[in-house]
Every structure is written in structure tokens, then in C-alpha cells.
Amino acid sequence: MEAKKKVLIVEDEKNIVDILRFNLQRTGYETVEAYDGEDGLAKAIGENPDLILLDVMLPKMLGFDVCKTLRSQGNNVPVIILTAREEESDKVLGLEIGADDYITKPFSMRELIARVGANIRRTAMAAPAAATAAASAMRVADDLSINTDSHQVFRAGKAIDLTQREYELLTFLASHPNKVYSRIDLMEQVWNYGYVGDDARAVDVTVRRLREKIEADPASPIYILTRRGAGYYFSVAQA
Image 1 (cartoon, rainbow, N blue to C red):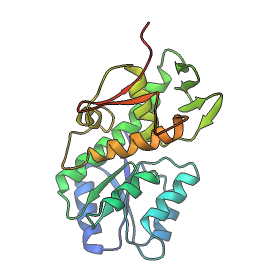
Image 2: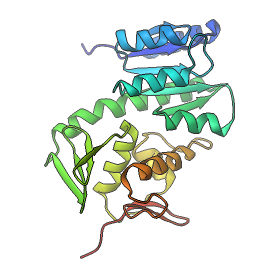
Image 3: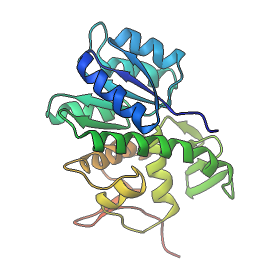
């Protein structure tokens, strides 16, 4: 029997924790709970969860700092930021520091469960996909290459530090050169769920972050380009 996937809930409001625990366990997940940021960080490291639901406003340590610390340690566990605020800056900051997703309170439990499942499936699919890749090193441009075994990207021979989501977006676009994908397409193909509200904004932020890391001049990109009114594509010169 396959082991249950473990979700770490880091949230200081007990009633929200109780609701999340009940619904996640009913769906078949194992849960671990933490009520402040410091305990959340300790359990994120010690419990090895498959996904973290991470509130922003926490005692002792903010959710943003928990996520930032995990990423600085090379821990790429999927993180869904929970925020009670509608501010665009909160959502963008969460993505900037390496969170995989965000959801704004109050949220639909059905939507949250769907996002938990999508992010866990995405991570579970990544390793087999890399292992069965035809070639471990995919040269995608003159000075840009992707090693699908180690999940590393190199530009001019130097490794680039990408988040898991940035890596997956780059790999997806580079695997379909010159094909234009709308933000909704990318939400379905890379994020593994359909367009919900203003969530396609996450695509723009991830593309911008990716450009800052792989482009010599992010303001004038040569790899990931925009087709105005249509979407994004990975540019490869046609023979």
C-alpha cells in the first residue's frame, strides 16, 4: 500500500487548522501541524512533508521567512502560501522567495484541496520524468543547457539557481520551441490546474524571475519571449 502523502499545516488560528486537518485527512492525507513560524520551520525540516500550507502572518517567524530559509537550505518542498490579504505585493513576494503557489483567505476548501493535489502530483512526476529522459543534458541554445537528471540549468557553463517551478516552466517551454502558450495554457500544463481568478498573474512573475536568471539582459530577452496578446514562447532560430 502506498504511504499517505504528508501535509504540514503552519497556521496560528486553531479553527483554521482544525478545518484544514479534517478535510485533508478525509481526502487521504496525513497531516502535521505547527502554530508558529519557528515550530513550522523545525517540522518542515524534521518531518519531511510532501507539501506545506504556510500562513504569512505567524508568531515568532513570518511565513515568508520560513519559506526563504527553506529555499536557502536547498529544500524544494512545495509551499502554498496562505494570506488573508488581497495585496498584490504579498502574492508577488511569496513567488519571489520561492513559494510554489498562493491562495487568499477566505478560500474554497475544494479549491485548496485541488491545489494541494496538483502540487504534490507535480513533484511526484518530476523524478520519473527526469529518469526516463532521452538525454540527461538538453542543449536548448548556444550557451544554455538543461540537465534533466540533476534538474540543473547552465548558462555559459555556470549553474543557475532556479526554483522548482522556474525549472519546470523553462523545461516545458524549451521542450516546445517557438510554440506560443497563453498564461492559461501554462497554468494547466506547468501548474497542473486551470485558470482561477487572477492566478495567471503567477505566470508573469515566474517568467520575469526566470528571465532575470537566464537572460544576459532581462529587459531584452532572447530566450523566453512574449507574443503580445497571445502568450510566451521559447525562441529558437529556425533553420
